[in-house]
Image 1 (tube, rainbow, N blue to C red):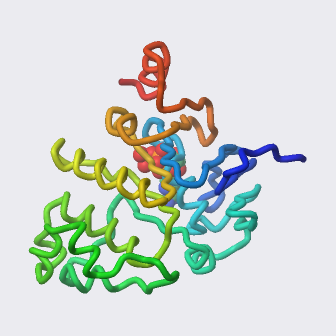
Image 2: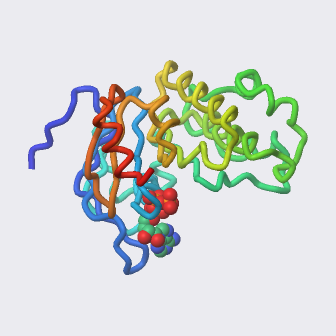
Length: 239
Ligand SMILES: Nc1ncnc2c1ncn2[C@@H]1O[C@H](COP(=O)(O)OP(=O)(O)OP(=O)(O)O)[C@@H](O)[C@H]1O
């Protein structure tokens, strides 16, 4: 099959199928991500958005099809090999270690590529984290935990980020801050796949949106969605 892609394409997903044990949850996903863009995967609960990120990262082991990243096939690669290619995953549950402090949480993952942000740069970008550097994970607010989870992957040098619902459960003012952060990362050349159910937030940051239903892509929108398209998106999301 000839794959016709945008010249600036970073990641191409073709006919991706994925399983948890015997249960198939990804049923032939097709989409691509361009270098330097923010792409959202939108969809209702259980649509298969998180599973798609987990399949790209190699956390979901049983998967078939093609995940081509900068001309390299990842479908048979293991999680540590995929991480070394420069892809990082920030899970919905944030995975902050409760008994470690902010600095320890930040420095736990290894630096995998050159060009990652230094501790000083990170503390400058996230002043809250600097103020709370010695606080344990359990003492952080939801917003601080989310910032820490993102800061932690920026330190590794990865420049292709998979972010699972960073806005979830956070106050609007913090969601706005996260939106500003994502825009800054985009300006610095990062490429981001964002899983979201918060359409307002997704719309404020992303270049394109892919709608997922039953483990498949059912529609795609660009950032300049028309009013008709907005009502279509809202129908998909049931809002
Ligand atoms: N660890 C797992 N084992 C078995 N089935 C799972 C597992 N995680 C998710 N699923 C199932 O896979 C399907 C897709 O779930 P997924 O979490 O990818 O959806 P989602 O679109 O990210 O929704 P949500 O926002 O609710 O997480 C659902 O039917 C879900 O029940």
